[in-house]
Image 1 (spheres, one colour):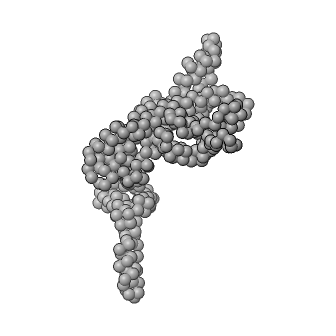
Image 2 (tube, one colour):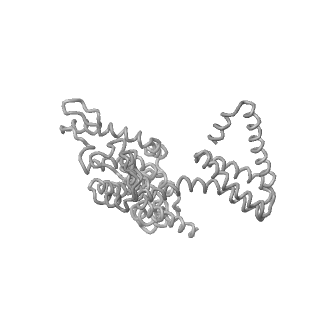
Image 3 (cartoon, one colour):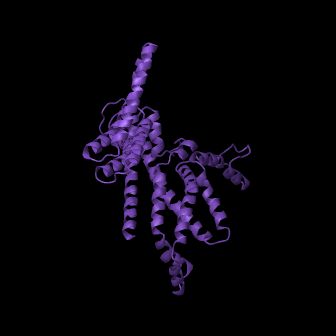
Length: 376
């Protein structure tokens, strides 16, 4: 398109006008042609429309190099054809509707997810200069102490954040259930979810802030330490505890999400079951373990897996608070750090490892959803 416009601009003005009009007429003729064939059934027309749904966005992408424009063209063509073809719901028309609907989604998945994933895997076998190095990037990743530390830190995040967030959220949901001011208490815990990870990180940086002992402390924790007669502590410098202080931030954010989901699930537990347990002489803890928890198990799985995936992808908190210094880096942060250092191969290797870590959780989540559908 740019080359065509540049070529047009080089011509005399009197030659540009008819060419622009001709190009405009060609576009209008194509639109009218497709409008004409859209409502018609038959293999020929279906084939033409199918080709248009695939080739037009592809040509736009090749011409403009823009995924957004290609997706827009795919959406427009698919939408227009669907509206025009709505009358013919049988035979080839139904297939065209299906393709028209799926083409934009397939295109976006292919360009935005499948292609980058495959390219990342290929890049992980090359150095930053484009030289094929085989598994050297992965060998480097699992032999360098700093890289191994990064993987371990990520695993620590996945172990602690989902467990503690879910436990706190569940306990809070149980305690405030059917209490006076339940909505107000929910809002209090859910508020951190409205804050971005970067904003939350800045807030907690002030909480952990340290000043010299002879100066007033502006960090909440160190001010408390000073009030009790202690010396200010550099919370984010001492490994491995600094990683846990970062983990607190994500727990603070995700507890609200866990609480809301689990509170709704608790309210869905049949009252008859709880009353029957009471008649059997069980205490509150036994009713919670034997009635409530089994009743909300699907919601617990969803909360745990969702927070686990969020923990694996954590980046903003570490980048904002420590930038990975003092042995606090995680895989997502190290991906960015390596890419910024022109080590695209190592960055891709970290991405592949992160993908492999996320994959079992996604598969488990999908299988649980399938089981729930089978039960229903």
